[in-house]
Length: 321
Image (cartoon, rainbow, N blue to C red):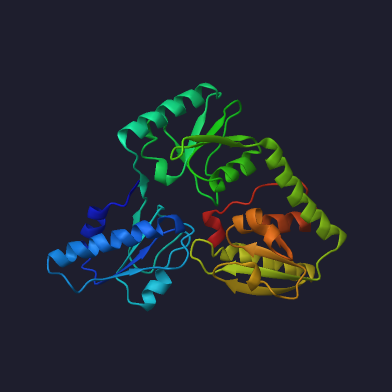
């Protein structure tokens, strides 16, 4: 189903003369990558190469932002093979990384069915912009798709154009819906199912986030936890410093907190709210799981400025300066 590019991986291991290789994959690909490692190990054994150690990273891989290079450095790893994502311009690894996008690879008949489905959907759209994730961009080349990330949508949209998201899950199309405040039709090429994120859901999201900010105005926080992630592509140090500067200027007590993965059980501090200077989706998607108020840095600024014009929080290269 997924093109794990075994030949390219083997070539890169041989090229870099690596002896210890670390394989990193998101949850949905871990079992396939485990089998892939066995295949690669078999290739080397058949050729009498026994001194190459292939290691599976068992932790998270939320995106190219979540690179396990520091951990790999502890083990003196020569190469990381990272599946499911493409490199981010603001993530610089401490050791070499080979990115394998894991392109979706349907059989010919399924691909023909996918194209027929898409053509029918496009006829119902107004001058549509096709969006997708890296896994599906290869089979969608004929539609010139915009590839999006879960942490930002690096695209503009002209008036009168519809957006069609082609891919699996709701994580990425939700970002589109939040940014452009509109209904987003979704086509899943794996299951061939059609669904949509409705406008009422988007409006409900914005209403909830504005409600959180309003709650802070009614009960101003006396102490705030400011969270910085140590994940390379989420370590928004520039944003972290700016939030702390505002707190100092306003005389609001705060505690800086460093975390890798951010989970409810980690946030046990005596604060009134947290500002999360990591992936915005921790707040936007998961805030209901937390006992205390969670804010993105942008929402925190809205609270400070008394601004109720909601703008979506997105990651940008400037956040890391």
